[in-house]
Length: 334
Ligand code: PMP
Image (cartoon, rainbow, N blue to C red; front, top):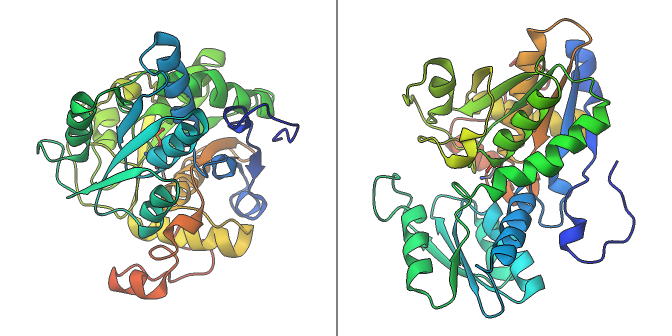
């Protein structure tokens, strides 16, 4: 369980999140689904871990020091975490983010005092993509440090050092599968490689939204994509250094309709108001669990909370406009 003892600083309050059993879902599918409650981190998401390890590693290497400015391209959560931790350490932050992310994440970045640069959501191949823009700003800023969450190995190493061992310990090693989506691959890369080292029999499965290449990459080593998704922070069309750490046995694709149905199921039946990637992870975990013997245990990640998607995932008009109004109040969609 999360240790609520005192923490010497904000950095020390990151991690040690509880692994929450989802009792209704587990009973319905006769397999145990456990969710790592990353929304309980101080910045409200799994990305607090990446930000913490990237900052601490850069400080050790001397790449970050008094007067530095942290620059990052991010769908939002990494920026929120970097701005929060940057403030605690006295670093400025410049956050470059695509314009198709939720308003709530922009508002949080502004509230934290980050210098927010919103750029058009264009493909990676375009030099105006937020990733390339962030790198350019870091290079042209005096004392600029580019966090580079996609390729900075401190990201996955942080999950290898903390998230993986926390899951292993909380389950006493009784894990049949680990299922999670990837945005940078830090979480999946670090946790899957740690768990596989502990017990090679644990099935490690990538959960992928439409529009991402990871499903095809794991299945047949191509970077094919199909369709699109409203999921924020997950899905990639290239193989990042952090995803290279991953050990993936399999992949499963979850469409937006299933993700939204699961998000609303989790609110109504488990009392959990979560973001889309967390709901997609739970849907994927349940689907994989059903392929395993009854009584199996599947672990997944509850990446962030639903509060930062109220205007989308939990707004009836927005859902209707996107043809995603939930249709069932049970698990028939699964
Ligand atoms: N869910 C959300 C909401 C995220 O913001 C991210 C990070 N982009 C992820 C999941 C995926 O985490 P990772 O970067 O460790 O793959």
